[in-house]
Image (tube, rainbow, N blue to C red; front, side):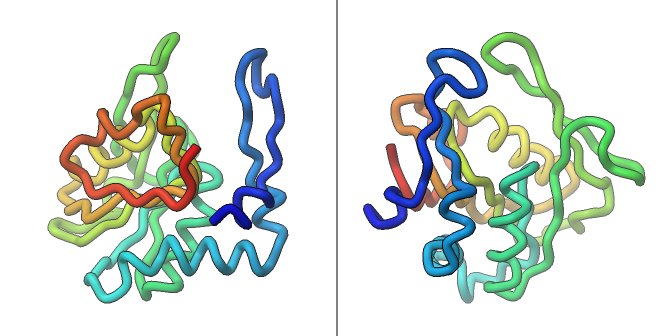
Length: 171
């Protein structure tokens, strides 16, 4: 996995001073690296009856769509407020300074469908927790959360206690 870490660009002070941004676009453009990421994110969930992959805006769309294809599942986007055209359900969650909201079409997940949540990054866990809550709000059953990168020091797993979490790369 060190090979994959080397393909990720580190951008200091983005989007604000003091933040080190892990830019995965340099990994995504590398066909071997991208294939390895999708293989590795998919493998723990193959043959487990996952019916839908829910990808979180926006990099979760890239990874989640590819994982869904690989494991033979459908794909559902979770979007920021006001981006979906049909009737949507919403979850509002706390950020370090304020709140944010995520939405999903109310008919995107059927009662009892087996769902895998996919995103690029697990940091403080707020976005992933909100997405898990959205899936459950419409009746889906979450069978895992898969992320490319986990920032261990930010303790995002604490907000996802009780969930199966798979993180490919840990910093």
